[in-house]
Structures are given as structure tokens and as C-alpha cells.
Image 1 (cartoon, rainbow, N blue to C red):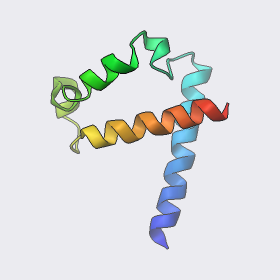
Image 2 (image 1 turned 135 degrees about the horizontal axis):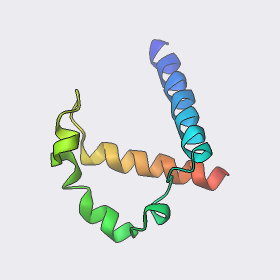
Image 3 (image 1 turned 90 degrees about the vertical axis):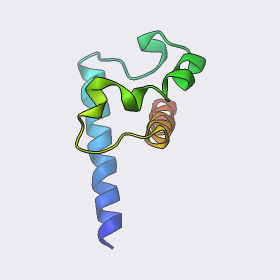
Length: 79
């Protein structure tokens, strides 16, 4: 189905961005940006309302942030 192709393409794109970030030595974990899991949890309610996020062409939700962090942790665990 189209959704599966889209999902597969999305996974490839995420993997490429992750790899690029690693190559450029950009942070790819909470530890690397020096915040705790607790601080991350506390910030998730504020992030969607931040001025640099509000202008995105789509709404960023707490659920999106939770899923993104889950996927990032899984990718780190696979390394």
C-alpha cells in the first residue's frame, strides 16, 4: 500500500538524518545535550508552544515528541 511505501521512505529518511547528524558530531541523545530524562519530560509540554516551533507548517504535539524520542532511543540501542 501507499502508506507502507511512505512509512518505509520515512524510515530511510530518518536513518539518513541520524547518520548525517552523527557524522557532523551533532547531538543524538539527551545525554549529549546534557539534560535528564526528567527534564525532557517536563519540557515536552512547552516545546509545542515555543516560538521557533510554532511557525512550523504542522502542529508539533507531545505525542510526536514522545514517539520521536522512543525511535531515537531504539536507533541508539541498535548501534
